[in-house]
Amino acid sequence: MNRLDDKVALITGGARGQGAAEAELFVNAGAHVVITDVLDAEGDATAERLGAACEFLHHDVASEDQWASVVDTIIERHGRLDVLVNNAGIFRTVGLIETSLEMWQQMMDINQTGVFLGMRTAAPAMQANGSGSIINISSIAGMKSAAVAHAYSASKWAVRGMTKSAAVELAPSGVRVNSVHPGIIDTDMLQEFGQGVRDSIETRIPMGRVASAEEVGKLVLFLASDDSSYCSGHEFVIDGAMIA
Image: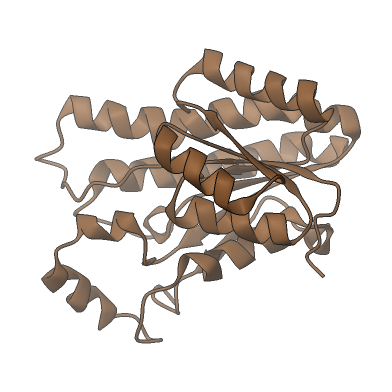
């Protein structure tokens, strides 16, 4: 179950946290994994830790040229691309009035444009093989209001809509597209909340705890594998019943 034998996967933002957890699960499931990030030292260290089935490439997801270079490199080295996880993203707890145009643009560049460029660049390689799975990491902030994270919420709602549009367009060629909507995850991104805010949030989670990166990664692994062969165009929420 959930095997990725002989599949080639690209995971953005894979140097640490959720992306690194996904990469480890993918490697253990038999895939060759390419992780990308702007954090070169952490990316190299993660690839070295995961062994020969994982490699690291420097990659700014907001750069059209770097997307082309990364996908071209993967095709040159491995001949195919089967899975794309658009995992890279940033988070800021800033409300509407306090959000500067610069912060808004940075959030959209990474969280939204990065996903658009990823899907647009990877899809032709998958279409050529007649199959593929694209998993876009959104958030529960893309399912309900997030008043203290205005730009972040906007970007994650956009990812949700882009996923549905791409899923319908790419379905005839055998390419599936889904979005994953985590709640609160125990990664470096959680440090954006102060301890008091984090404690308050945890009290509102029916399961009484935050998720581990591995728990989210297992859902991503399912969507990457052929076990989810008839799943496309949908939101998969993993939040401990927080928005139920």
